[in-house]
Length: 294
Image 1 (cartoon, one colour):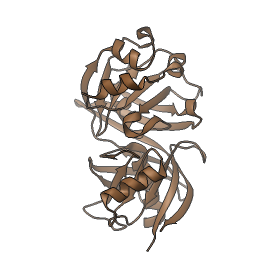
Image 2 (cartoon, one colour):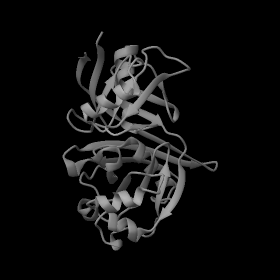
Image 3 (cartoon, helix red, strand yellow):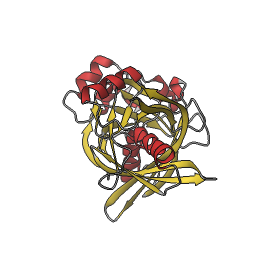
Image 4 (spheres, helix red, strand yellow):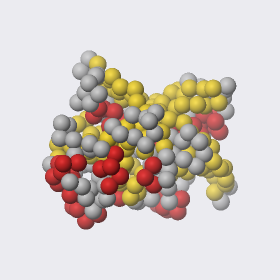
C-alpha cells in the first residue's frame, strides 16, 4: 500500500519561497536505509518521516534525514511536519503539537487565521555555547578578510540540539561576498562538534527585516540552505547572550536565502531570564503538493 507524502514550503510568506520539505506519513515500516535513499532521491535539505499517525508518549514520532545522513533535530522540518500533522492527520485546530525527535520532545504552537494555520512557533532546547574559534581561520574558510568579521562578538559554536558555528559580519556586502573554500571547510569541521556555518549581519535586503543570514552545510549535503530554523534558534541564543541589540529580549525578523533566489522569512524570539536563555523560532508554511509513494 502506498504512503501519503506532502511537499511544503517552510518559512515561506508565499508559495515557492522558503525551504522545501518532503513529509511522509505512517513510515514506521521503512528501514533506515530506505529512509536515507528516499531523502537522497527527494534531494531537499531534509525529508521527514512520521512513523505513525497515532500519537504516542505524548507526541508524534518523527525522524529527519538529509540527503547525506540522519540528524537529531532541524528547525524547518519540525515546523513543516507539525503543519502536516495538524492539517492532514488531526484535521482541526489545536494549540500545540509535540514532535518526538531524536533530540527529545519539541513543542510547536500554532496561531490560526480564520481556522487556518498561520504562524507556527517551536520552543527549542536551551542553547549551549561551545568552542570560541579564531576569526582569522574562519575568514579564510569563507574567503573573506578578517576585517569583515565583527570583532566585538565571538565566532562560536552554539547548539540547541544541532550545533552551528555563528559568525558575526559587519556588512551585507561581506555576507554576499562569502564563498566557502570546501577544502578549508572540511578541514575546519573535522575536529569540531559543529558541522555547519551561519553568517549574519544587521544590514538587510528588505528594510522590514532585522538581520540577513546565510547558512552553509556541505557536510549535510546542502551547500547553502535557504531557511534554517535550527541555526536561527542558535543565533537567537547567541544574540541575547551577548546582548547584540543591547537587551536581554529579542523579537526579530530574519531574512535568509536571498542570495540563492529562495527568499525566506524566519521569526526568532529570545530572552535571558533567571540565568537561562530561552529561544523560539517561527514561520509560515505553504502546502505545495500531495502524492502517494508507491
